Length: 93
Image (tube, rainbow, N blue to C red; front, side):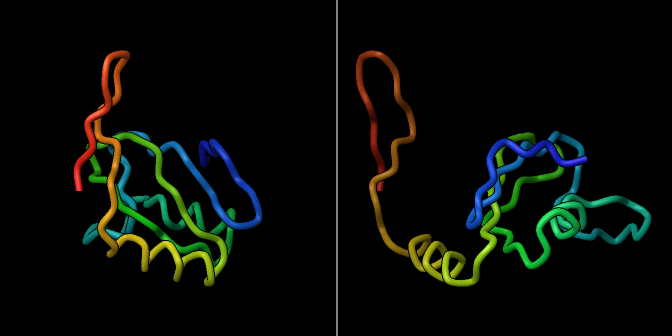
């Protein structure tokens, strides 16, 4: 069962537990998260991947126009906050 953190008409954010694969593996009997997402939101676009052993938030686009825009933005340089604390923010390009 999906652990949906946020969902609207455009986006879906889920909590991925460690030990779960995202896409089908060489083992056809191994369950994978993308199948559950497609059952919940048919046609959703996978926007990033996490390794099997990694837990974390994953997001999916539910509209092709949003998918295209986000995919283009991934290739553009930007400042990303990589570490924030009470005293400072460090950004990298």
